[in-house]
Image 1 (cartoon, helix red, strand yellow):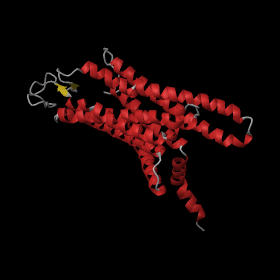
Image 2 (cartoon, one colour):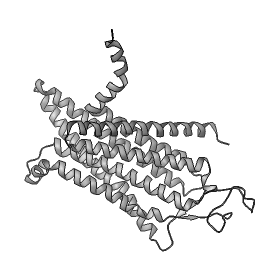
Image 3 (cartoon, one colour):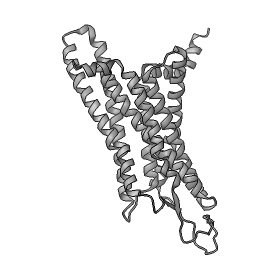
Image 4 (cartoon, helix red, strand yellow):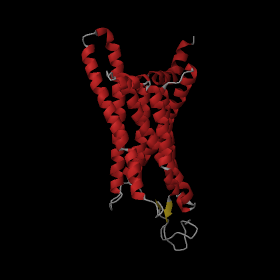
Length: 319
């Protein structure tokens, strides 16, 4: 029987998953709508769409995980065909979201800061094309990199039957247990684990920290200059808002990765952390990034205000 703490943790994680799906769906729909309405292709909207879609897929894949384990589908179905697909989608979507944020940092960094180098000037002129291409390649590589997850095989417990299925009321009279999954023996799992962890955390984190720190330094210098020119304070406030968004996204990413790493470390010990902890961590990431993108994007914020306040304004305008 679950403790009170586990019940509260379960409720919060479920609520955040639903909230994250709905909020990121709003961001995605409104961003696509604005692009179609303006009949123009903007890099910023493309990045926001990628983050929102990746977060939605990540949330939905976690909901699938919860459904399988909550109702013990693994006791009555062939999990070897289902869970590897869900794992593939979950890791691919999370990596796509991480890399989309990394390229968002690069985009704003190059757009805002100024350097006299000829190569940087050329990059600044073509930053939209560069980021668009890099983002497409990154998302494509995310799904290619995690394809081996499709070949995960179940490590069956002692009460498993010959056809890789096992029921709650099995012939041995043993309780149904959650199956574990692993790669085939011939697969270099240690090397692969090192590669995909490197792709999930250190590389995008280095990109985020490098670009965001350059952005902070530039905006600080810009702010000091703006104090002498009161007419450009609006530009300064716009830069500060972008800086706050980038730093907040990097902090949320680092917080999420740190908690996920702690969870993985505990799995090798006797006292393992609950899986709900990992679901809560990722659900928080999807919800927090979605809210941050809306709060710091003028168009999305206006759409949210019009949707939430539209009914009241309409009622006030009626005689």
